[in-house]
Amino acid sequence: MHLPNLSPWLLVLALAGQLGWTSDARAFNGKDVGARRIGGELNVSDSSGVRRKLADFRGKAVLIYFGYTHCPDVCPTTLLRMNEVLGLLGADAARVQVLWMTVDPERDTRALLSNYVPAFNPSFIALRGSIEETHRVTHAYEIQYQILHYNGQVLVDHSAHGYLLDRTGKVRVRLGYDMTAEQIAEDVRSILLGP
Image (cartoon, rainbow, N blue to C red):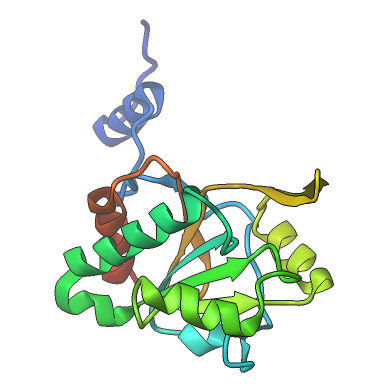
């Protein structure tokens, strides 16, 4: 490869670009989506009926997931993993808020949510919106879900990933369902160390 006359620093930067290196010292285990326009205001109710906005959690890292209480596998596994994440964070867990929003507001009543979500950890907050609010929030967070009625049963298919928001409420990391609690805790620590 022939390189033009460049200063040593420009040469290093050119090679770094060729090799795919980045200047960001913080690499995440999850997918860095900080440059994308994902997320937005919540403005939905918690299980006590209090309207919640992202500003309520300013200064904390936020882990947000979407699901439903009748979910047989993904949702309880995710909530157990989030509890494990907080355990791994130790004292830093006080600087993190876990939010879990239902995509099935017709069946997931406030009473049901107030028993289900805090059973995994009392600090977790369950969120519930109207059908229109649920569409708005899931669309903003690029969450896919579909509620099907089949043979007298309700089946819900939904995205299994979640997001890590920084202390200003900006979505920074997409967290895959296959990530371990250790990997998520590392990403949370990176966010907590940031500006």
